[in-house]
Image 1 (cartoon, rainbow over the protein chains, first blue to last red):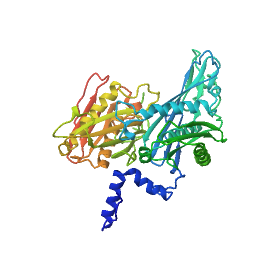
Image 2 (cartoon, chains in turn cyan, purple):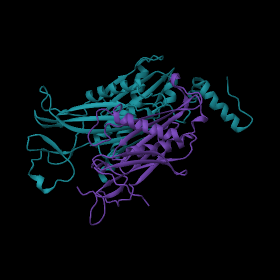
Image 3 (cartoon, rainbow over the protein chains, first blue to last red):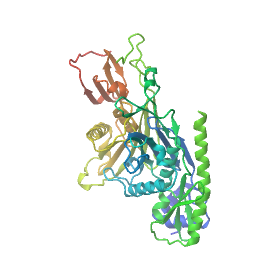
Image 4 (cartoon, rainbow over the protein chains, first blue to last red):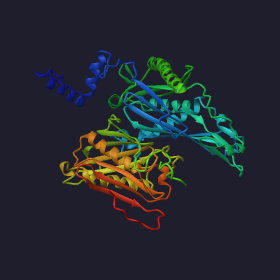
Length: 303
Length: 212
């Protein structure tokens, strides 16, 4: 079962590719013995992450995040609505995560991918329970008007770690969000004012004087690790996720507090030291992500 | 409303009547797809991915002597000015999916790949008029990136007629102005028309002019 060196360089390479397809687990285990992965990453390193803010000009806040080849596009659109009676000065947030068929060969059109609903629910839970967004900031006129923020996240390319990328894109989109100007028109209805204000409209009373950004609390960041025997692999790609099925997702906020730990079964059982190791890996990843996000934000401000 | 300025002849966005918007194409944007492309026409941004030729999922639809071509068109919720509630499955999306499928099917050499399926998925990220054309252009690039044998490259563009002037490549404002509009898809080298859709919205009379 060992792949032997071919006589020519090319036939040697073809044997390795065939071995990788036919016996993926032994292929990986031989790499793990040397504490490295086939893409030359050490076990605890995540892939290159980039954040681009504001790719969708028509949205109030948007971000494009790439972790390795996994690409997520998040956009926020704000609409005015009447707040509910039991929370008259709070706005509201609707999160939707979708995997269109372009992202992966396993997604069939007409039937949403199973994993999309799971990630959607996880995202909702994490964003609502972390104290990043204060819904009171989304209020306009108490009892009469508030903002409804629709956050749509689209997976454009799925190559592992979908939840991490989706969460990062949601956080980045909220960091980029600018609340538009609104005014009250003659019927007493609140309407959004787009573009420049012509002189004649200045008689309309502006509810908020200038475009402002949300003041965000501590932001949650996450890291998914795969467990296999005694190895912990951080930030798996799709190939690794398909052969080793046990993963742990840890969400920490930028103050280092634990927001969520998610380990949905799997063949490998983890003891406390493994979980602590995952949390430690997540801590360093959080610092990394925070830096990347602040860099992108400061680049935007310079423009 | 003045879609064409009578003094200068410029349109609302500063273009001349026979000027296209800036186009930009990029291939290989989706890692897992066999072929993919991102195509922009002005502010309209569209991403297309091709998976195939691969095994037919639904054996009942398999064709014995040629490849089955399927296409799905979707618009992101944030792609238009107001947020869309139903991004797929509405009549317009189904119609455009059909149009793109038939246009691409005409140019793919399907008889070379029997018993297989080619999936073309198109997602509109930002819509500013001409989405149909941008989708066809993106699909062509994605098919080429996937190495699928085709007769020719299909290119497409739209045009309209406002303020007694023919206008090339309408944006959303010009498209919703109520004048007639036409979308054309042609096989570039063979110089043959594969798609022709004309929408005459509120025009009472149709004048026919021979173009140069």
